[in-house]
Amino acid sequence: MSPLSKRRAFTLVELLVVIAVIGILVGSLGLALSNGDRGVAMQGAQSSLSALVSGARAQAALNLSNASIVVWGDKDDPETYLRRAAVMVNVKPAVGAAFWVRKGDVVELPTGIYFVPPDASGSLPAKFEKPADWSSLKYTESSSLNPTSLDVRLSESASSSAAENITVKGYVSVGFNAYGQITASAVNTMMVATGELQPPADGIIFKNAESVRGLVVSTYGISTLINEKLGFKP
Image 1 (cartoon, rainbow, N blue to C red):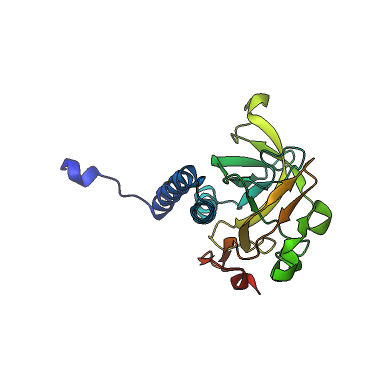
Image 2: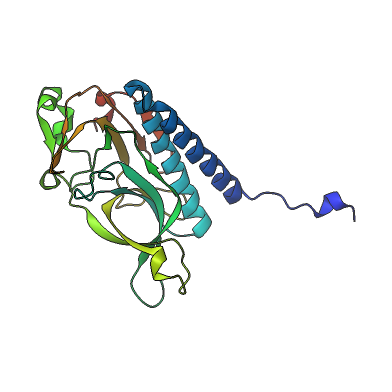
């Protein structure tokens, strides 16, 4: 048998994972280069959203488990508040409580750009559809879905050290099942906007109604990039 005949081909799942990793790296590079220009920074943030969605979908297929994007939502930590996100896989062991395993690097948005969290129904807050309100629009936890504390680990191993386990207070955003479809309870929209964090981290003021970007994910996991506010209307 020739050496060539022993070569193993890549599976579809492996290719999806490679594409997702490349996407996250490209998105991270875009953010690194974009902090000096707000318009370019918004494009970089949108690219990171797309990479996160691709990564979550690939991890769901690879792990045969639900995978979601988790956005950091602890207002007591202004450095990360609505600025960080990561792909996480939900693990439900036969014994014990379910927990999340982080997959890949944490993505951080440029300074002055924030994730817009969903409201209790899983949609974007209705007031974000009214440009006139944006001159004084202030986001607080009471105006949206309250963040929850998530048990996050870097490994699924039962022997993982306590140092590898952290608690993340945040929002579970876009999520996929093992078939690459968006989960029934998941948000299907992700949005980023320019804003100002108000001391002492008690809210964010969004002043520019047109400075928004994001994406909408179909039931079957296909992302559509949105480059203007009107594109987010249901």
